[in-house]
Amino acid sequence: NDITGPMAVPVFHQMADKVFDKEKVVLVPDHFTPNKDIKAAEQCKFIREFAKKQKIENYFEVGRVGIEHALLPEKGIVVPGEVIIGADSHTCTYGALGAVSTGVGSTDMAAGMISGMAWFKVPSAIKVNVTGKFNKWVSGKDLILHLIGKKWNIRTKRTILYKLCVIDINELIGPQRLHHICRFNSLFLNRKD
Figure: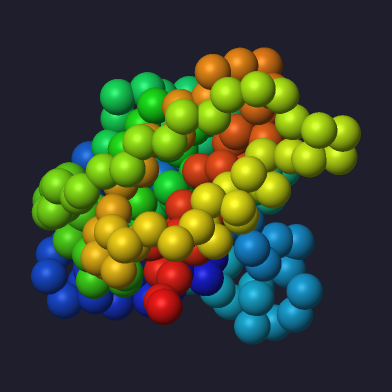
């Protein structure tokens, strides 16, 4: 995106001249568009020029853009079974679609754009079964915040994978599942007690 991309590109240039696959690298300037000031415009211009030089096919400019974590699934770029890295803590949102996804830092993002690979530690897992129905005014966000607040001893480990098994999936459609449950995974993993 237009915040983290400008940090990853200089690292990229220290290591390589071209992306590993111009179809698989995706750039979405969605934080500073429309541009609020000259600095924001410069960030977006920097990403636009990089995308043009690299001939990146999935570059979404103003008029074709939206919130990146909604846009990529809508465009069919994120699909079940894919492994997605992004330089954004909300990249884990794609878990709702059956993809393995996580946010990474600028150096790892640059390395991913160069090699198409990333190193992952296979984490411990917590399986949570949720049954029943939500009360009125209770949402998926309430559920995930409750789970984050639970006192699990395993939580002290930095890398945890948890699988949320919802019996009645109709309770968690659209934003409930996509943006509330999976996105808050980054808060769960970064919580310190």
